[in-house]
Length: 185
Image 1 (cartoon, helix red, strand yellow):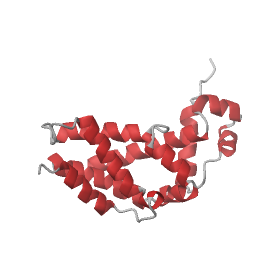
Image 2 (tube, helix red, strand yellow):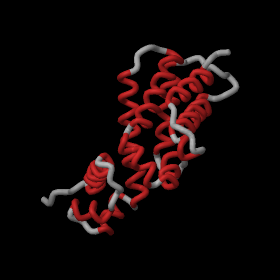
Image 3 (cartoon, rainbow, N blue to C red):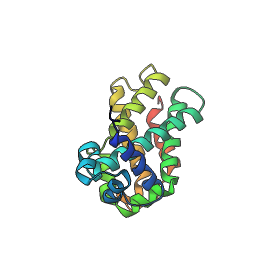
Image 4 (cartoon, one colour):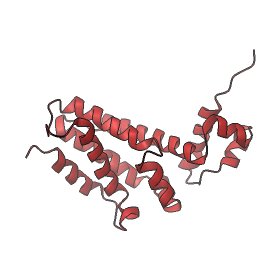
């Protein structure tokens, strides 16, 4: 019986290595490394943007899990701490910042719109955290899904401030904004 390869999983693993090494994603090199042609790579793993989005999504999920594990506390303060952990880790990761510098427009599109999986992943992760930590609604007139979306967008504005306005990415300003949004006042 012939062995069935999971070319998609292999491609994402190899692409993560390229990304973590600070290199631009090269689908030709990726196909060569996997011993497949570009057509097979495209059929199994998608185009360059799809692979990039999937790599970024896997890294965002990992960072989120690390934040959940690292941050103690409970309630709104835990939500603020996890969101801030994620913002800080994203801002301080050198290979990620290198990617943003190399491909700012493409990165923003993949990271902050429905064209990539990351924003949906983050909104869902934040929604679950809010529901677990703050079972009573902070703002009864704002559904938890919308609160999660708001928090993600606020985080993005501070994480990608350099690309959006020419400012400086700032996790502490994000923390203050998260705290303000989640306050009961």
